[in-house]
Length: 345
Image (cartoon, rainbow, N blue to C red; front, side, top):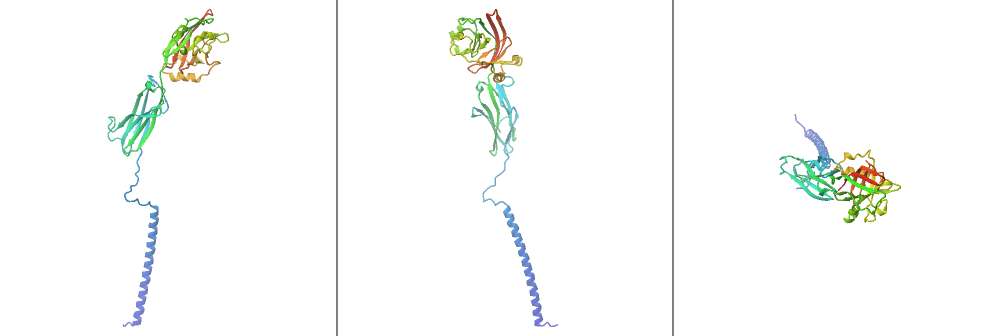
């Protein structure tokens, strides 16, 4: 069959039109897909961190080392030189360095001044090769250089990344043991005899010399300020022990210069059992004085008698606990007593 030119042209135009329509639809779909992809990519880029500049490394996250007190009190340690239970510090500190152990340095701090006490590194004989932990045992024995000093220790651990951690521990307050003086003898005469040079009516506290002395020794050895107490008497208070400054008869101490102002506090002998103490109870005995109350006159120990117990503090800050173990008045004219005393050095 013969196709006319018009028919051919019409068919061709229809075919081309359909082709163009399909092409336009296809192009539109492609454009929408591209736009959607671009939109998603833009959002993704906004949520993601900006790329680092060339050569810049992102910061690594390290596990910081730790320190733990595994033995020993966290409280202030009250130490006494030579004491069986509290004559030394016994503390243990565990260092953990997950990134790799390098060293553990122990410092001692005295009155705010820090100095290196000991260093443990990977060459230490107790270090286990490859381990990231080390437990340090502090065994510090108190000596005279520690007395009444403010001191403690610091542990500092360092790992292979040069990260460090510190811990303060073993905070201590140290005192000397007390001096125990048994059977201190004192006496006096009634009426008082100021001119009697031979009777031991004075109490000397002079270093390790603690005991009853007479006026002759006081004058000859010039120990005026070391005379802590005297046996005295007056009509109102009777027989008592007092500081030199508060003596009942001024003429009794006229020859003593630099008169002491020793303080006394009476303790309940049914509560305070002196037999349970020893020379290492320095802190306990000082607390007895601090917690007790003064009587009517802080420079007098009144109501003295057998088994009476008193706490005392001298002008040079020495604290004592004493018990009158013997007391007798003969014919209202002779007074004798003995006492056992713990006194700080």
